[in-house]
Image (cartoon, rainbow, N blue to C red; front, top):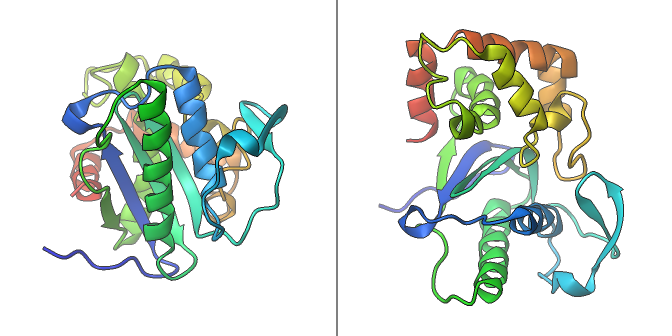
Length: 234
């Protein structure tokens, strides 16, 4: 089945995992490289060799200084989360074929880096990335929560269940999980240059309210939330 081409100004949930569910991030430098790629490849200019254009006088937590001017962005990266064997992105397309071009550069660039580093060949990801259009207000409201709560699977296997009571510890864990845009959304600088947060911040009325809303969402892990979650990963 041929999937529709992404449309300008529409918002999408994009995700993919490692081939055969293998890890795509084995150590800190792998996560950092992918975050660098999210920033660097989000422009209309041709992809470059990052080794020659990235300096290490860091301007923000975890993100090196980029030493060249960047072109026009292809997408708004509204939210992201990296997990050991998969990733999630919330993207809004800004230019025609912007998501397609961005994901092509991101997938190719990171795969080449990973294969060279670990002396392997072949595909790294499990086929073409999955793309889900946000079709309703409910999808839009749930997606950033779904993306930002994803790391809880690493520490709290039962966090979606009614018997889960460690909500405070769960929120503390999310606030310190570096490979996500969540810290930036609650006012803790992590990778602020990577994401475009204005739209969601206006919608949720700022960092404090966003933190409060995601905490309520965690406390109310209901069947309705699970139903919408399933739609977001159709």
